[in-house]
Amino acid sequence: MSLENVSGSLPVENSGAGPLEQTDEGLRAAEAASANCPPPLAWRDVLTEFRRLAESFEFSDAAGHTVSGYVLGEGPPLYILNGLSATPEVQCLLVWLLREEFRCVIIEYPEDAASLRQLADALLLAADRFGDAEFDLFATSFGSAVALRILTQDSSRIRHAVLQGSVNGIRLSWLERCATWAAQFLPGQMKHLPLFRTALQNNHRLWFPPIDPTRWNFLVLNVGSQRIQTVARRLRMLHGIDWTSQLSALETPVFIISSEGEAERHRAAARLFADCIPISKDEQISNSGHVPFISHPHRLANLIGPFLRDE
Image 1 (cartoon, rainbow, N blue to C red):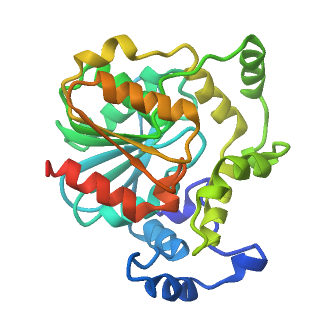
Image 2: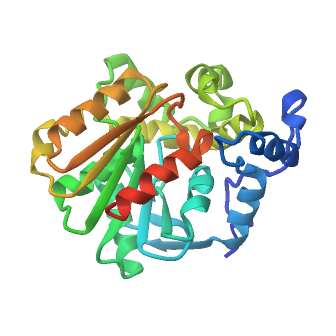
Image 3: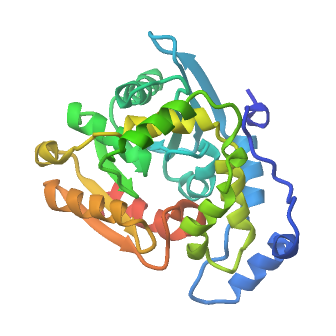
């Protein structure tokens, strides 16, 4: 099944103006001139190749939920859990850097799932289908809550876990619970919400390197393509979650990665996990925000690889 035909795939063409009209060739040449930085990944080229080379999978679980995702690479299995409001394609730059050393399996969360348990079961079912009795796990943001659901219930299958942009649940007010409940029935995509782009820009734009302004457009397109009701349903899953009392029992080595530009709730969760998980290490990426897998994929890959290799 071709990834070109997957619903929600992002266009590779540039539809913007101004800085977005710069060519990837020019951007590569500009950053290559700096001896301290690797040439930037041309995201349009990588996305095109990801869609061409990655294998898609899809099957139903016992409850009728559709479990799907993409596989790219060779080596030990590395399962990837995405954030709250993006499609699996948002991980293509990171996967592209890891593909020669790991078989990367990106899970697409079942849209009709109603709990973290169902999302965790979807990943484990995919691992069963691929015959992966043990595997490594990379989870970002919302995905860290799904990862902790697995780790606190039965961590025996997880060799290493990397949690980036950690979440330890949230506490929604009564008004927020009402709003997210109603949003589960709204039609349309995230890009149709009022002030969508402004909110995204205020939270993330500052931490994107100026060498490639088009990469910001990649994030906007990806998050904007998600359905409003899907994001609202996932947000409600985080309400009232608190892993604090269970962290000390974890036996899996966990690497907690935070970023300078993240919201305080993410940095606080990272500190909590680093303090409470017995076998853990933590590191902060400076001059980066909540989505380093887009803004700084080389730096993130250079942290993940050695940890998974037990170096």
